[in-house]
Structure formats: C-alpha cells, structure tokens
Length: 212
Image (cartoon, rainbow, N blue to C red; front, side, top):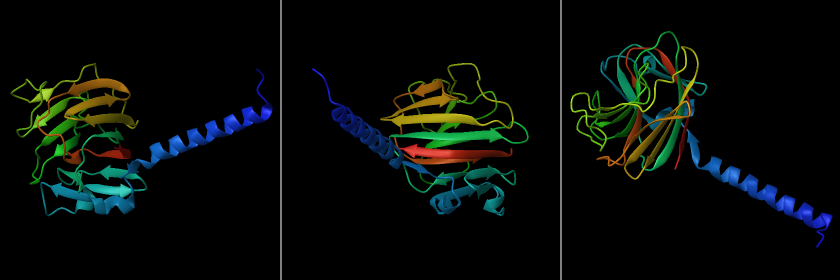
C-alpha cells in the first residue's frame, strides 16, 4: 500500500508538533534560581552576622559569586521534595571546600540539620549526614560520611563542574560531571530547603535548575 505525499507531510507536522510540545512541557517544569530577581527567594545565614550578606553571596547576571568575608550558607525559602537538581560550580582562584545542602530542616544554624553533597576538592560527591540526620549507607559514626563511588573526577581551577542530584522518596542519587558518584537510601528526612555553603574560598555557581 502506497502512502501519499500529503499523508507523509501531515504525519511529519504532527510529529514535529508533538516534539515541540514535549520540549516546552519539560522546560516549563524547570526554574532557574540564580537570577538577580530571584534574590528575594533566598535566606542567608552567616557565622558573623555583622558582615554584609552581599559580601558573601552576590548574584551577577545569572552567576552566584561566593566571597570570603565569613562562613555560612544561602538557602531557598521554599522546601522541596522529589526533584532533580542541576547546578554548575567552579573555583576561581584556588580549590577549597563547599557543599550543596539538601533537606535542610527549620531552625537555621551554622551548620544546619541536612544532608550535604560535598564539593570539597578531591571529594566532590561524598555525602555527609549532618547533625542527626541519617541514611542506610551512613555507617561512618565519626565523620558521618558516605564516600563517593569512583575516583575524583573534578575539573581544574577555572573550569565549570556539573552536579546532578535526584531526590526521590527518601533516596539521593548524585552525579558529578555526568559520572554516578553516590547514592543513599532510607533517609530520615525526605523534604527540606536547598542551600549552598560559603567556607572561606572564592567560587561561583551558575545554571541552577530544579525539575519536579
């Protein structure tokens, strides 16, 4: 049975429309949070409360710049559950220590009750169960750390690294530069705020996307 050219054209149009709609729907579920306008969506907690928060966390054209004035963290004002988080980071002068804080609980303090995905140089992908939170794989009762699965795969100073974290029903799965580096299960908290640390070393974050 032969198919007419008009039928083929119509099917191609339908396929193109379906692909366009799928791409739009997927994008619409994502939200970029490192814009200057989004600074009202953040809470900043500093060790030295006399310091200007903008000297520690500053938004600049889609990039969050982290300074060295004091230690602390910046977190969302909204709590999240079951999401995919994507973010990029780089060290600008020298490597140091930082982390992405997940499932942060209320009553902010430095440091908070949360799960931390490490960004410390040579340890990116480790997960720390902080201040009483726990997971099945967290058997280290001294450092409370679940070590990454693979050798460090971080990029040199000045180059952008990528992190993807999938939070789903009490599990966290972590990819560093597209490589699976960690997974924890049976977490004692499944929901909370999302934050980023300042630990005394200049660095930058960009392209923060959340997909629910």
